[in-house]
Image (cartoon, one colour):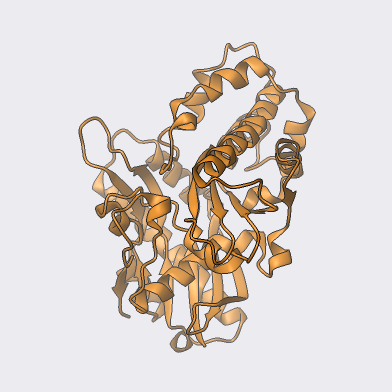
Length: 376
């Protein structure tokens, strides 16, 4: 049994998730331990500014990347020290990096690109571990969206005989995986459905302070503005067939404000944003079912930070009366650690020389071995 560390910092920018994962020769993964390294507010602010910058200097990029990499190294050190594990006992670290911009369709007439701040050479130096990184661009080079990559891991963890199932990651943005029954010839389908916590967190921070709306309580206090919801749902992304992926390049506060009249109550906007997430997820599920010719799924497994948002889960349940919402912990994997676990597993795939993408998800020309290897 080999031990891997998966590192993930998502679009919510709340910190580095580090997962210690044991993987056997068949690819079966078991979560051993976790550590969450909080992101300092100064670095979080710097990264958010980079995500929305029209122009940026090389010095700013280098400084943010260095600080981010050192935070990753601290997460690894704390994870290993807390569990009395030496770096020599780790086969590899799978590092996702921090997405700054994701443009799988390019801009104007420019090429497609995806940019994650990361310095795997420095991370290998600081931790003494082999690092596997830069997973996304290999899929992009093969004509894929480079996202989402987690559905291959979802398939390994959750696919079961006789059941159609859904996995829904509710991070800054929501991505969906539709899993056919094990043994079926149907392909796994996965894509981004739209914003999840990114707009909810940003609107809450502007009007209430703090990084997020605990349990969706503020959203629950408001009333959905149906007219505003209709305007938001007119965004072309929601109606684009998969493969598709998105990020802050499309959905940000300026985008939201472009749809506001200025007369809305802030709490009602928050409620409408929560309903936007639930509605766009439901639209995505219907789109995936039509593509697969699938019946209603027996279960939806929510993960990511939004899995703790009771108001959001209630809205999803109302949209999906035929599908049970089942905690990922019932399947042996806590909701907060699937994404970090996925990159540990993808690092294992890379060292084994096995493809890490699903062309049915990303639209790539075929299966590809993802990531580069950096020795300590």
